[in-house]
Image 1 (cartoon, one colour):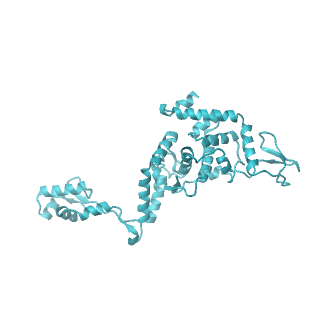
Image 2: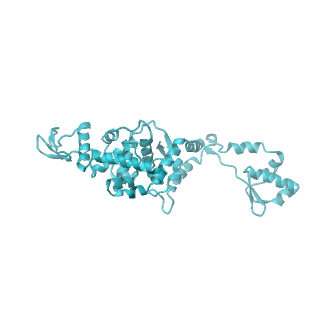
Image 3: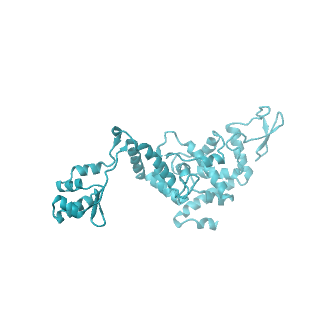
Length: 353
């Protein structure tokens, strides 16, 4: 337990103590593996029922904590979790503990769960992701969609989607590049200027600055050549160039050479709207709260499973979203989420938040 606390900073000890208390309460309620099996079995019997696959009888006999049952009519045996979300469940106590902590809105990560349940880290990671997938399915279809690019700075762990020899954030960069490529060629009537401020500045330039700016191009031209072509004194040329440079209209290069900054190309309305949404989302307090949660609990993650982390965040911080038994009932509404399916999962470009 000392080792467990050692991984917390002083200001995070309250979270650790809350997690320990919640897990101790869980251990008192479910001390053994068979207690958790019994909980899941009763849930299946109550919510969907069990019938014998040989004679279709609903009359069964089962011992406490057993996954097997015997039919009272034909005396054949069967598995109580067959055909349910928990069909391939091996460690019922680990599944139960994960759901218990989520439903009590306790912050934890896979490493902490593995230490508390005394299981392998990989097992705790897989189970927590599967439950996070179920929590995501609980979210309303009318929930707000947010571009995953909002969370790019959090992507620091590799996944199967990360390009070879690239930083994990290139998963998102590749998605952005594909989106931009689709939006590059648009009819002029559907395109908009991406920098109205620059356009306004150019239209209101004083006469001297407008003359110099018109003379410049994207090819380098020397200070002396500018003065000679305009027949101006050096002081006036220098002051005019300085004004244009300060307004980000031109660039000064070594050797007193100058070039005009190319006018931004027009972009599609979809591209402009997407960028505006990203900028607006970055200014939301709830996004800042998610960043703090993600860094303090996970120190960042891969883009591939971003949607799962957003679902965990919503379960913990959104009032009225989580309630006892809600995750269990949602699990029984879906087929088992296999390990292969989890590996194949990739968060969409527009994530639910």
